[in-house]
Amino acid sequence: MEEMRRLRDINSALPGLMLGIIVCGVISEIAGVFLVADKLNYTIGLWIGVLTALGMALHMAYVLDHVLDRGEKGAQAAVASRKYLVQACSPITGMSAEYAEFDGSPMSRKLGWSNDRHDWFYSDSYRTVANIGLDYEWFGIDEGQCAAVDRLQEFLLEDARRNQFHTYEINGTVAQSDVLHPVAIIATVAQGSLAANNPFMNEWIERFWNTPMRTGVRRYYDNCLYFFAFLALSGKYRICCLLYTSPSPRDS
Image (cartoon, rainbow, N blue to C red):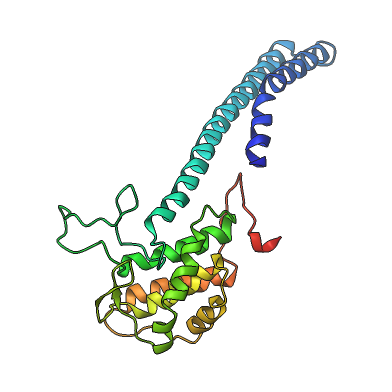
């Protein structure tokens, strides 16, 4: 985290910065004794400026401390999240459940606001592989989660070639013969190619390229994921931050 170290260097320079402001104030005061007629107003204005500059320096240090704290905690959270995905994605199929427990196992218990199942590879699950792809494109860090993309692309390949997807248990068993959002599957699995390393990744991208946007009643969800996949695969969907911008691993 070179940027974090650089910011710490800035913050550790605060005493020197404040001393420099005071020294400049003293030199300006001495110069004013010889050069300024209205010495009282000059002195008052000068030291108001010096105090303002000191206050701004202190505020900068305070803000940087908070930025550093959030940055380090955010980095820890990112590592934990990637390791969690390793647990949540099937080691056989690469599939993840819509909701998972803290240990990564599918959440099969009923929730207070829904009677629907959330422990299978269903609509909300498709975004997992897309997020893995985008995260790797942005940060280039693999804690083992990228292997899930390879497993999923291989497992779903034959269904894709037949253009006949299903609703699956995360172990790959077909739970229902139909699927609500087939275009979303193609789009997100193709986006996962950003983190993939297998012989099928380009086939998924080409399949996505040749897949039209969905029309009809359920087009909203499919086409939203279609849109995000297009952005990510374009290589122009970048993360921006005033203090830290991570280069894509594909830029090196």
